[in-house]
Image (cartoon, rainbow, N blue to C red; front, side, top):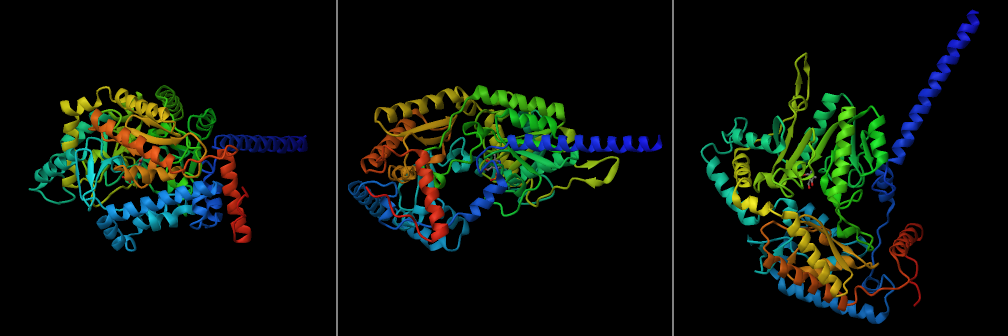
Length: 562
Ligand SMILES: Cc1ncc(COP(=O)(O)O)c(C=O)c1O
């Protein structure tokens, strides 16, 4: 009888162990299903594969016919390339000279220079189509370089520039004057901070505010607080989303350290919702609403533009529905929903993405433009989540400091920005904002179509990206033609055009006609010659083959005979 009882007990333990293992296996499978099938979706594998990609580059002959173009097209491309090269050297002489003087000493510059175009083409481009790193002045929607050349500013200063450079100049000037009496005293606050807090609480709809020095730090603090209060370990971020360059939110390529406590899941996927519903170790979900334009894909930089598969399309209704479902599940499961508005906040609506999508997060991060032109990161949240200590356990704290947090000059300049948000002029910018920018995108697309150009733009309000409609290996050349037309892009190239809201219809029409002219010249110069049998898939296969040959035999396969 006793033996029977013991057997039964062992049996019971066995069954329980089996059930636990099955449940763990089920959760593991759910997690696998919730990963995007790309390398971006598999951070660890992505990093490993990236470390195996061999360097190789095209010589000056291959450079012009890497897609198998016939000799006459290659010659046309070469002639155009050399024409642009001579033009850039003459037109940007001083700017390029100054850039050359500092490049060896500024690591950032070396990086951006190397990753402006796909690596196989990089050194020929660097040699011949040098890009100046300097600008001298800004006015209205224009930038002027050291040679006096004027460009329409489509860089958006990484997204900071929402209201136009002149606004930020004034904000800094007034902010500095306002902070002058206190000067750079840190630790004590400038009195203006009380007004900033009042306004940020009203905008975010939250109880408390903390000030940081960058968007990255605001996100770090949001995640740390979520872990502290939930006592859970893991972060969920969505595939391709950028949340600053801190390790835990950047688990893949670019970060040499593994992020052990980060789940990278598919955005806008029912499988990801299932993971949120079943796992118990998830402290928070981080959302960057900019991904609505290209869910599950990295920021669209021209250095990865090896074919024409870049896609972008924004459906506000669908993304709002996704955010609502996330909100629902996070509430159900006590997971902290963090809306990272560092990029889009104040660009989409005066109340930021929460207002724009009609969703209230538990913690919200802001940055970039909120500093009125100076460096900033801000976190707003519910009081119980923002608290950094426990009343019942005095040694159990959630530490966060930063020497320059709440810098008086930043606080006074931020105040200029926040007060401006309430001005009739700022409210005027937000009136019909999406309608204006969608119409502009539509107009440009019509012009591109009418001219039979294989280029289209997609946008989320004033944030634009360029897509290419016909398979090609040379789309990245467009950034240089745009530069030639006096359009200044950020170093990531045609993947991100950011307009400030002070672009008038007249400004925009000029930009649009220059954009079309740039694409027309590029087409005439033969870069969009198209092998009718080529597809994006065959291009990628060809590149993979080149990489394998390079890795295995130290050379590339012979070009296809024509
Ligand atoms: C959504 C988002 N979060 C965080 C950051 C990091 O901000 P910062 O560059 O100020 O550290 C960025 C920067 O681009 C961002 O776009």
